[in-house]
Image (cartoon, rainbow, N blue to C red; front, top):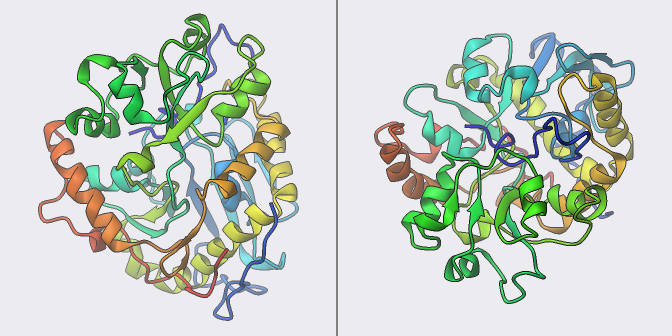
Length: 384
């Protein structure tokens, strides 16, 4: 399952360069959110390696927020490695290595990467992906990353002025392009929100079809990326699109969650007790002041050059952060930043299980929220 690959624009030969991809009070934890000098040394691996689901962008900002000065960029592997710092900029005594996903990993699902590479401790695993692979390649998320999935369906408001959401697209029979095999679309068609004859699973990330047919079809994307891209950076379109998040139509999927293999929950418990609050605080700090971290993201993308067909601009990053905060994509959970609502996870298990069974990828029998997520390491005092 490729969430970013199925929601971000791939760079195709006909497109020379595509870009994809707020202030407030925050409460810092008294229980370890600031980390402290050397706080992870001896309890975490010497290098904490985190596998992302896509190339560097604002949706990854809370991870790059923990990257200290003196970092290095491996442009061949698309890795960024440097000191892992806390919210006060203190070196925690270990390094952080952020590994880009997508093209550099041949679009391999993060779950598979975790199982193929024992040195990769953590990775971005969406809750529906954890459900899908729970029987064969189980993972447990230790921090929710995004409270709301950025994935959406967008349409042209000039072509469809009366459409206010995905259900209206269904009522009007509008063709919707998406990456085939997406479970959320099976949910939409199975529940009657959309009809099977109006969805087109041939979408490959190329924006030219949306532009060429002048918006007669709707299309999947990320609310924190494509609206800016189509308005500001695709000159042949150059006007607003409207969208609705799939989260708001029933597929309530936690996105960008930080997950690990089940055996690591015990093996690295002492590490996670200190690291997860640092990740929580990084989420708060990034959306409130993204300038330094966005510079790291842009520097990494620029260093990679065109080797992976990915470009990203400061404007796209700024838009991404503003939208992430304004639309509540990053938001407090029931027990602080990064916590999971277990009832919500159970709801998605109930909705997704028959869909994955129908797709030939049945989840673990008797799957429960505790099998795929935990709030054990979350500090409830850290909030946005």
